[in-house]
Amino acid sequence: MNQNPIISEKLLHYIWQFQRFESQNLTIDGGEKLQIIQIGQLNTNAGPDFLEAKIKINEIIWAGNIEIHINSSDWQAHKHDQNLAYDNVILHIVWEMDHEIRRNNGQEIPTLSLKYIVNTKLLSDYQALMNNPASIPCYSQFQKVSSITKMLMLEKILVNRLERKADLVLKMLNTNNGNWEETTYQMLGKTMGFGLNSLPFERLTQLVPLKILQKHSNSLNSIEAILFGAAGFLENPIDEYSDSLEKEYRFIKAKYGITHQIARHEWKYMRLRPSNFPTVRISQFAQIIQNTKSLFSYFLLFDDIEILKRMFKTKPTTYWESRYNFGESSSEIQKGIGESTIDNILINAVAPILVAYSISKNEPEYIEKALSLLEKLKPEKNKITKFWAELDFSPQNAFDSQALIELYNEFCLKKACLSCNIGTALLK
Image (tube, rainbow, N blue to C red; front, top):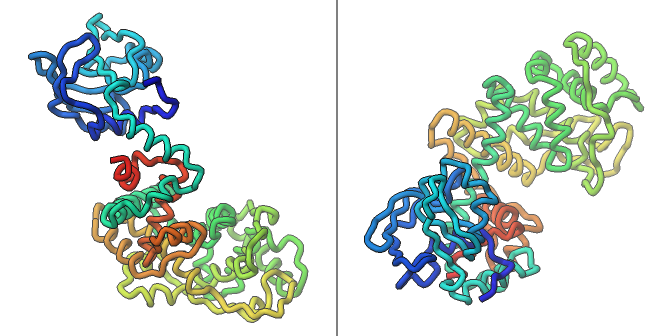
């Protein structure tokens, strides 16, 4: 068989890890008999690919590490010959032997070539997945995989997704010198940007520390003035209300030394429904901040999900009831934050904070609380969950929808089938 362009180190890792080759009467290049005792542990950090392996060559047992390449000459190309960390490699696994490899002391490294001992069906099945133009490579074969395999994959990757989000929270916490309250405030702001305006909303919370808003908790007008002013919406007041906010912001800005603000053009409106306009979300955010003494305590200690949701159920003020922008009246009456929007906040702000706190304090019950929260929320409805619904794999709750979004974005689109339980099940 000629070298196939689909061959990758990831595929060779899979072949070795699951022993997807003819293992009877194995020999290394050179003819010596090879017996595999332990395949070793996959190493996801720097260094050889599999650690603590054990093999037998002729009558001698070797214990050490295993390195995998497409061509044996990749050993020099990757400069392993200059790295002492690779001196304990007992077996070099390659697709094709094109160059003899030796250690620093001149001793030859045993090499196993896979090219002629791997079943061609495995390669053709893998080729079919990699060449499939569908956004879900296994779309046409998905029903062949058992439900338990799918569910185990979802459980695994949901935890990965939550931990990745929690890592962002912990980095934010570090920037805030361990202040959970400030971090929660910033995370909520970022979430209320709902993707398109997440970045300017996060910057807004960084420009205006929570403690400044808390000093004005008795006045919603003051909180709105500070937030709208720092967000760049009060530079050219166009009605009596925005004019009054601008005057108050000018005074407060001087009092607290607020020196920077966001340029108004940084806020996005394209393809947004009016209820998602940044002006509307900032007015809602102002109410949440005024009505909540400690966001972090609410997020961390809630027992009843309905009580937690209640803190987000704001009603628009008289001015914003009939407006989505300053000075622009609307015949549509604004109703406040909707149920699905509140669920989005719980999914993308509350759950990651719970997981981050769990990791920070080494208290696993908060991860369980985050998972329980997701199980109680309705599944998200978007183009990704619609793809899965077409495969008769509709999410039943936010736990499922979050996992399916992760599966689609991090595995299907990246064609990481070899790291997916569903993909490897099909290749078996």
